[in-house]
Amino acid sequence: MTFLKYAVYRFFTMLLTLWIVSILVFTIINLPPGDYLSNQIAELRATGQAEGVAKAEFLRTEYALDRPIWEQYLIWVGFAPGPNGFSGLIQGDFGWSFEFDRPVGEIVGDALWLTVLVNLAAVLFVYVVALPLGVLAAAEAETWMDYTAGFVGYLGLATPNFLLALILFYYGHKYFDIPIGGLMDASFEGEPLSWAKFKSMATHLIVPTFVIGTAGAAAMMQRLRANMLDELSKPYVETARAKGLAPARLLAKYPLRMAFNPFVADIGNLLPAMVSGSVLVSVVLALPTIGPALLAALKSQDQFLAAFVLMFVALLTLVGTMISDLLLVLLDPRIRYGSRDT
Image (cartoon, rainbow, N blue to C red; front, side, top):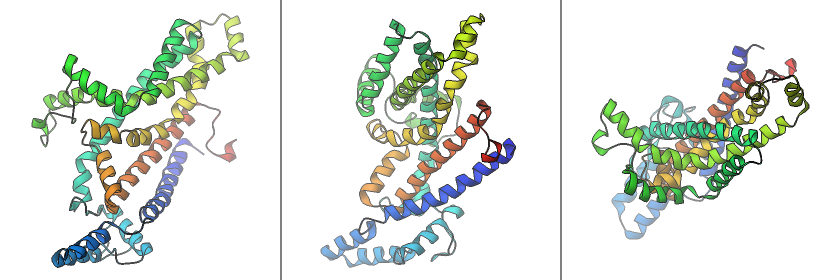
């Protein structure tokens, strides 16, 4: 199997997995008794608001919530026609948010790309910090450099993200005049991208990137250090040293390449972990990402909004996993495309 065929194979397995995830997401969201409209109808009937009850009943029929759950799922995905024909996820209709009384697409439109932007910046921060510190800690094992890197790593793991956000919220603004809250100045919202808007976004990204990426960088640094130490203790390293290979070249050519596999494989877990772990941070720092929308949707049982956000997180997971699989195949020649090649 060639690399291109393997990439196509992984793409279609990703689509199949996403379809299975959509079934699980829709089923789990509908497990609790009732839904947003049912709860609203019960409240309106208790207060005698007949007009509100009629509107809620109309919405139940309009979005097929009065049909069996299996039929609701098929309509939601777009596999079956609903009251308005074929209009589901695969047709680009993400449903209606009953909590915000707006289409889901309008609510998450800007939040989606801002979420991707924040988390990509956090992922880059994780790799830029974890790679040199992990390698340095392993190369200088049991020295002050190793102990310092370890202390910083454990501190990053032990400090809750929301607490770190509050600390930087105060001290960053007080001493360094770093803007806190949002991802750009209010004057740039809705404006086309320009150099001034880019600088504003880059400045606003400093604190969220640091807060969201700290724990991931600390964990990855410790993992890379452990992998490097394991590789450095193997006989081939001693043989290379005996042959007079320069320490820097020896480190980069053999142990780092072998220890880098788990480092690359973590991409699949890192993206969704960043999104889910940034929900509280987004609330604390008032970031316009999908985190606050997901929290509100789950609290109010706003099923279409919650389902779409969860599907978005699942898509990030699967895309990250596919990217890590493809990179691993390119990185390590010992990994084959399938069982027939082993």
